[in-house]
Image (cartoon, rainbow, N blue to C red; front, side):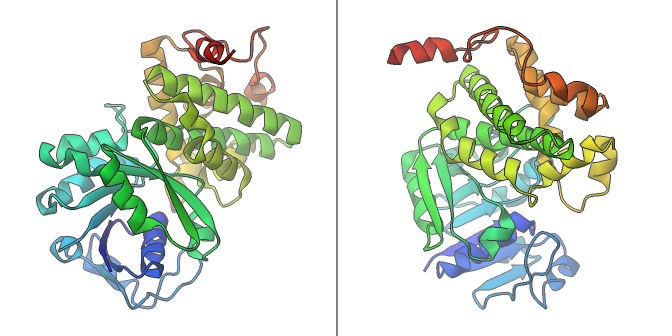
Length: 347
């Protein structure tokens, strides 16, 4: 079978390592230090994952040379704000036949770049065609337990995406392909924002009607944002958009949903994040999305409301009652939105 290298001992990186092992591949996971690698000698046992023994075909090593040697695919599973540094770690170990798969759902601060764009800025241009991104309704704990799940992968070219699909697809982990890497990454990033809002709604006990309406309006805002940046609006009704939004807005396993629940209690975002053992990508994504929206003069009512709560420490109880909108308007209309125009093509 094939050799898979995974950069990052995050819960998602370890989970995809388990998925790859179940598919019969040899897996090498790169840890930053020997101490970190040695900590897994008795198996995987973290707060985010069930206790699992390290499979015989998995090795966790502090050697980047050993981890990447003869790899058919390198999976980068790290927090978005460390993607650039980690891409720099592997840049001298990439080969022309190696797929580079980002599974990180976030946007880089200061540059506002998607993860595939960050990787492309770091590695040699001749390897850009090998860059792919994977997203979908993928709660690590459930997948680590072997429960059925699905994801979607898109790449700089179809051949690379199909190779990643074949390597990751298994009996309990279905992988689809898509041509819209921009939409896949934007959806995966934006859904974290919506998960925070859904957590606030659950924390305030607003009920199913409110939450359902919030998710629906949030998806519309996601599509408006992505379309304005050149993504295919249909992507946001797929696994990376609707699928991942349902999962993260509904599950207590979602870190971003947890942040929302805690915000509803009156806690500040910075204090919540400081108390967590894992990263909440939604907290770091909100200001990036708002910055992009301001540049495009794009109306973003839900995101701007959550920005006030997360970034400006406004009380969720004051903001949330009007988050579904106070204006009389068409469902697909908004300043600089293209959705109503696109919808007319199908009438």
